[in-house]
Image 1 (cartoon, rainbow, N blue to C red):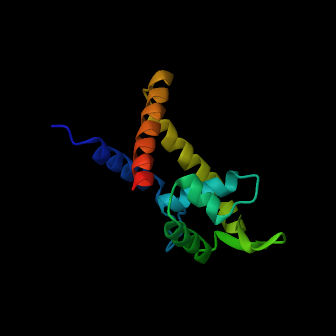
Image 2: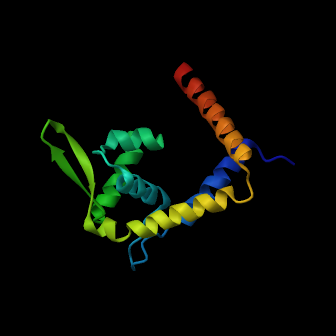
Length: 146
């Protein structure tokens, strides 16, 4: 029996999340999968990053981004700094604590990516992206049309 596309995507997403969980191996400190992805994004960015960038990059709601960033800030992995050209904006800056685990984050993300595409040829990977983009567009159209 076919489970359904949405269910399979949700299961895959949870498997990926579990693999990303626990990047930081210090007692009483856990970084969730989404937090790890945000840190990886911040660590790889060469430009200033703001909460709006996180919302757009990860296609998450403002409240979700606020919660994830607040948690990272509380744990000491990021700070929010004012920018001199707009008092309303605060850029997200990784701390020394985040830099200490940056290699671990990068390696974990790379390992997961390699496991995901293991046994797939380039055409299958291209097909995957084409199908996923069509599905996202279908859902975005529905959302815009109300």
